Length: 255
Length: 311
Ligand SMILES: Nc1ncnc2c1ncn2[C@@H]1O[C@H](COP(=O)(O)OP(=O)(O)OP(=O)(O)O)[C@@H](O)[C@H]1O
Ligand SMILES: Nc1ncnc2c1ncn2[C@@H]1O[C@H](COP(=O)(O)OP(=O)(O)O)[C@@H](O)[C@H]1O
Ligand code: SF4
Ligand SMILES: [Mg+2]
Ligand SMILES: [Mg+2]
Image (tube, rainbow over all chains, first blue to last red; front, side):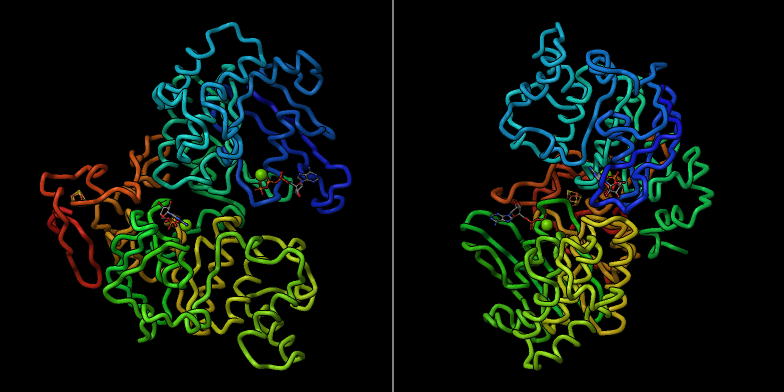
């Protein structure tokens, strides 16, 4: 269970950010265990900043984050490291996030070594790959030899190595073909069911997020402009911006 | 009007990157070129632009633009009337030169207008792409502009060449949905107002639905289906087109598994005997090991062994 209350992230001397505007401005959200929350919004609206704040990768100006009952913002040193194991991260471009020269076995063993996990690393790597739909042959392959979809499966497997309860995904399918995107969305659906994972899913594509999410949160200029159960937001969007996002691509098919 | 029949591009005499592309794009329309990554969309565009990489060999039954044979090496004509708008506007612009200087370079090589008039022409072209305050943009460096503004500058540059045919290769992929929608609206407007013709290369069905009059579906370098957008998206005939549409996240109710298309396109080195899609096709039959016939219906065609009524 993740709870965020009145979170504010203000970058110091932000060259890119509009002066005086917070990148994340008083955002609150609740993500129950096993649920998926989709976060949509245009570029610069603060989606990644919100994720980075939840991962404690940027300083939080004010507000509170509770993860599984713990006050996440007060954690330091080793206890922060352990708590972070509870969150797995998947980035947009699998090729940038995976070292091209390492074998898949090495890529998956890395977080286990760092955390001092006392299991057979290779066996665990193989079972993670299987869970993500790749045969064990892939253990000896290198990241640069993979297709986009295979690389994203490996990135998801790596995010799962330390058995997180929460998976944070920043545009996980935007670099992929629709055929491969469908495979990855199916995989995430399976993982959610089998492992009871909670997910935070960030994307520009409202249709992708609507398919996978239980609830939605629409951000604009650092603020939440609309939120609620997916069906409700999709069927009766109250904000023009949400309607614009939803209407796209329906021109030719409008009756 | 662009007419392409049986276009083939072979690199280093063994990589079949384009195997058999058919395209006909009437003047003043937007034509979509769809297909998975690696299926030959960009190479088809490069062949039309005359910008194929070294070692590439090109063959075609018909390859004409406005009646001029593109096979006869009329490269200057191509450079003048066909321009490229690529996926990454930042890479298309020179980072160390102001926009004004870059626009001027293009205008100077493509017209014999005097310098002061060129400045006004550049401003007018930027204004035509919907950029507010063109004078400020002329004085800016590319990095001072947002992605959407950069793409408008690239489009203005394409217009500055005097081109009336644009090849837009994934022009909105690097942009936000809302910004991308604005750029698409701009392209639509240029078609209506200036009689521009556009070949829109994309793997995004929403882009096709939004702006294309007609579209072709490429698979392994072969046009497997072509038709008016609405017919193609509402009632696809080729099993590959069907599979692409079925994989879209809004094709199934929320929470249900999507109809993911497994497998991958055959690599360009592979020799294809029968139907290229057969290994992944849910409808494949023994006869599919032989080349599929071309089927037509009104203004559309597709390549498949299935009878129209079964398709
Ligand atoms: N390290 C940083 N320093 C200063 N400002 C930043 C930094 N990172 C982001 N910003 C600013 O914070 C705001 C929110 O950015 P953020 O990256 O969270 O947006 P986003 O919604 O993820 O956008 P995108 O869809 O493009 O990924 C923007 O104005 C951005 O310029
Ligand atoms: N310069 C090149 N040399 C050799 N092969 C290439 C080159 N550029 C592209 N290819 C190959 O040609 C095929 C078609 O590529 P491309 O036209 O870029 O596809 P698309 O644009 O549909 O994604 C792919 O197999 C690709 O790997
Ligand atoms: S020819 Fe056969 S394999 Fe090819 S698309 Fe048609 S049914 Fe499928
Ligand atoms: Mg981001
Ligand atoms: Mg391409």
